[in-house]
Image (cartoon, rainbow, N blue to C red; front, top):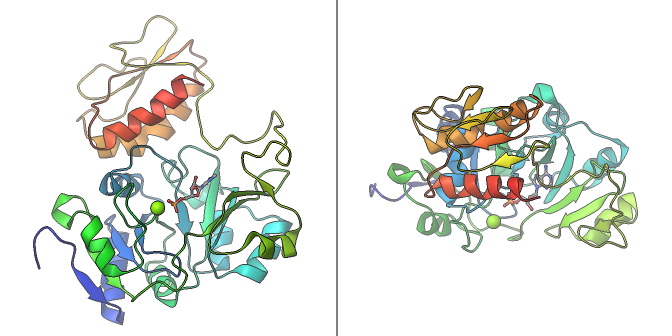
Length: 321
Ligand code: AMP
Ligand code: MG
């Protein structure tokens, strides 16, 4: 094994077992699906999910799709409604992700859904992916297994070239299932609001979805997607104003600290200044501080490197809405 490249292993019962163990221990595994290769981590483990963002070098934190082995597991993760039941019955397993209210008892990390109360869930058609999901028995968060800005990988070798090796935060293992059958990302449909909305076109044609549940609105299209006040924003931001790069909380404020600062009153994202830990805590702590009826959440400066850039991107968006 070359130290700076993730090892590729062909699919076998042994390699799947090994991958499942890595995932259960909070590690990362790249695995084939019918859409593209995914970079998977335990969706219930915030630090595992933070490692996904770090490995991809994503400049921002967006919600990730949660992959599960079957419909029963999907129902344990998200609250289904009649439209979701219909789509799941006709188009799953397959390249279709459904955005639904998250079930709080599923334990999905708030980083997986970027602080939203919804979760995108999918049962992949790929037998290899389902075997892995069954073997680990966990919901697996998995964006495409490429460096941010790179091309989506449809072969194990693409993953190996694009992502860092295990010593540099990349996957511990790449499962090789050959070329992906679809080669396109999954279609994402939001069923958590009044109007079913296409958030991203992908492997399942929108016509095939409309044939099952009727007309889909298109995200961002004002005529079709009515902006009702209660409509869920695709990005979570606290109701309390954010004051960034603060040194301390002023009277009436709460403090979101980082590193060796006194975070009173408030919470510290990572007293040991670990960006992985900070990302894992980010949304949960923002939600908690948002409950305190403070005049503002004062946020300590977060270093602008690695995962810190993605954290800062989220904080800046939350501060300027
Ligand atoms: P990727 O994981 O890179 O394939 O991208 C996932 C896609 O699903 C992105 O377009 C996300 O914004 C979208 N997505 C995932 N979860 C949610 C959610 N809870 N609400 C809205 N969009 C979501
Ligand atoms: Mg991608």
